Amino acid sequence: MQRLKAVECKEPMSIEDRVVPRPLAVRATEVPELKNFVDGDFVSGDHFFEDLNPADGTVIARVSEPGPAIVDAAINAARRALRGEWGKSGVRQRAALLYKIADGIEARFDEFVRAESADTGKPVALASRLDVPRAAANFRVFADLIKTAPLEAFETETPDGKHALNYAVRKPIGVVGIITPWNLPLLLLTWKVAPALACGNAVVVKPSEETPASATLLAEVMRDAGVPNGVFNLVHGFGEGSTGEYLVSHPEINAVTFTGESRTGAAIMKACAEGVKPVSFELGGKNAAIVFADCERDETIQQMSDAVFLNTGQVCLCAERVYVERPIFDWFVSAMKQKAESLHIGWPADSATILGPLISAGHREKVLSYFGKARELGANTVTGGGVPTFGDARDHGFYIQPTILTDLPESSCCVKEEIFGPVCHVTPFDSEEEAIAMANDTEYGLASSIWTRDLKRAHRVARQMKTGITWVNCWFLRDLRTPFGGVGLSGIGREGGMHSLNFYSELNNICIRL
Ligand code: NAD
Ligand code: 6OD
Image 1 (cartoon, rainbow, N blue to C red):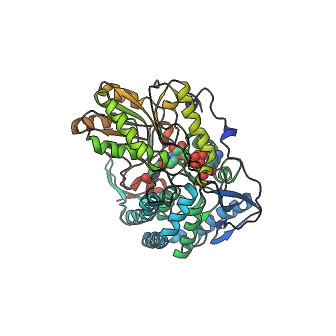
Image 2 (image 1 turned 60 degrees about the vertical axis):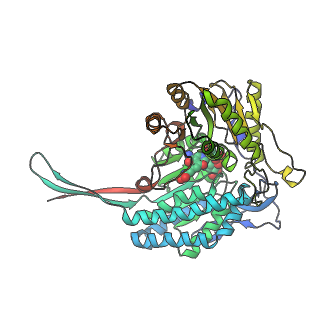
């Protein structure tokens, strides 16, 4: 945790502050109950927690927190599935099942969109454009890939004249624990479930406690697509002291793949150390954008608005640090201000809405505390910095204004720590070297973007970025075959394309003397 401490604010939130307060078992209400999915059946235990709609703070579901016995049952079911028919399944059969799952998601497209939007508060338009299509695409891409994945093979000649053929076969890694966050719930869950199933594993997934709905719908799709019992299991609940911690510490889990905060990654890594379990981590970011004076101006503002504000800034890839070449600094700040002020903050179902709420009251407190610290440290709040009022039920939701800050020292906690809200800090630079040095001066290293019309410079600067991905004149433009992941506090390993297949399988090299 030493590396994490180095960038914390003077008054960091303690672990206790970050633990979501758990409502006690709630009384039966009219809201639907979201159950766990174990061995092909929907099951509940004795404890429940509330699922809130962040747009107006209403309770939209009561969710079963399973407890150890149900989590054990899920893991045992997964193990049995591997010993049974699923363990013998071939690539064609698994690929066919993945296509059926994709079809199943598309057949219930509107239900998925409604569930995702109600859980997160994200605009229906965004869930329809991004989250749900990507979920179906995740299954299709990994079905295509597993069918065409080559075997690694070498013909070997040793100095003393022996000949051999080496080839590596792919086997499932076993029972995979999958833990995901709340910002792009279905997209991020299916990004891991699809390759895990493609490789023949059985999975136990735990979505975020904030967003249990789309994962529950996915369990119905799995059942209806004919996924054998025990291959896909879903357990709800919290992290520390709850389902998440229990799952990752369980001796019968063979590998853990996690997306979430860097601090949570550190805790999970500790839990996995005992059994030397392989981990794949996609963690936080404090991403930089470098805007050169020769950029395509209108296009850059349009796309930088997404890079900062999409999903109310709750995308791990969002640019929270923007470095702008000095001759266009004033223009950039004023154009981004105008853009931010034009973004419609509204009800998720309103087709004009660009910005929904943040995920929770607790998260809004955290983001607002950074706005407060920025002011104390002498920042200029160019726009935003507060909470909008509506005069209706949205005032009980967790909305926040899109915010642009300038004039903070680069060492300030608001420039160093991930805020995960609709906010960026803009700093001028005078030379390419200075911009690169400031962009790389972070313990994170997930994504970066470069905005210029000079192709040579784009190549030169991109290579020097200490990040897992660098976009040039675009942002969050994805090809699912490419490596995705981060350096430093942003993660361990890469997923995407063959990188996913390699994480979710064990390679057995066979050496045959010829
Ligand atoms: P989080 O780490 O608080 O929670 C993520 C998941 O981990 C949840 O399901 C939670 O219940 C579980 N969890 C928490 N503590 C645990 C423990 N001790 N053991 C096991 N499970 C535990 O993250 P969040 O607040 O849900 O999501 C926001 C964070 O995720 C941000 O930091 C963001 O940058 C990051 N993120 C990264 C990527 C990426 O691809 N790199 C993608 C999306 C989000
Ligand atoms: O596009 C992806 O595959 C991916 N993992 C995106 C992560 C976004 C973070 O919030």
